[in-house]
Image (cartoon, rainbow, N blue to C red; front, side, top):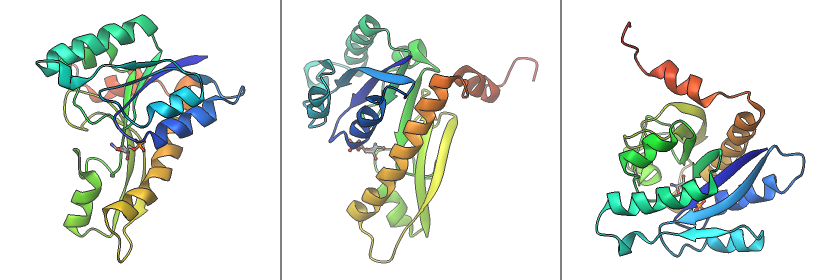
Length: 204
Ligand code: GRF
């Protein structure tokens, strides 16, 4: 059984979907802890499922590094097999990413490498594209630049605003995330192999 820690900042709708899915005995992964960088509404979902929570409020730390060090210590207590960033709106410091790589994944509401960053939906709309998408990636030390594990296109419709477009992307994100977690849990998806395939080797 794959154990999963989920980190959130917001409503946690993707977390909710993961909790609903992993509550099924036949699903090969379990969420063991939900963490966040602020008092996110999404913590309620963890409470609904009796999942422990860990809040590391970024505002209480002098630097990203100190905040990340505390988050890393708390994660280490739970020793999850996988860390899922599900709407965590804060870049993790390099030591934390390096400690968990490649067992740390992120969902993103755009078809990466298109529209990385905190405003992927808004940026796609501003660019006037006909389609955007959703992606699940391995987290690296760039901004949404890690190896892509799954992605799917989502059309931009006439009259879309950021809210309506994001609402149409999120169900796709959820489906991709759940499928990626399932494939990691069954061994069908080997995160280290995906990461290493993309890292140039000295002999290359
Ligand atoms: C998702 O679209 C995620 O990719 C983005 O923020 C959204 C989080 O939504 N970074 P929720 O908190 O899961 O509802």
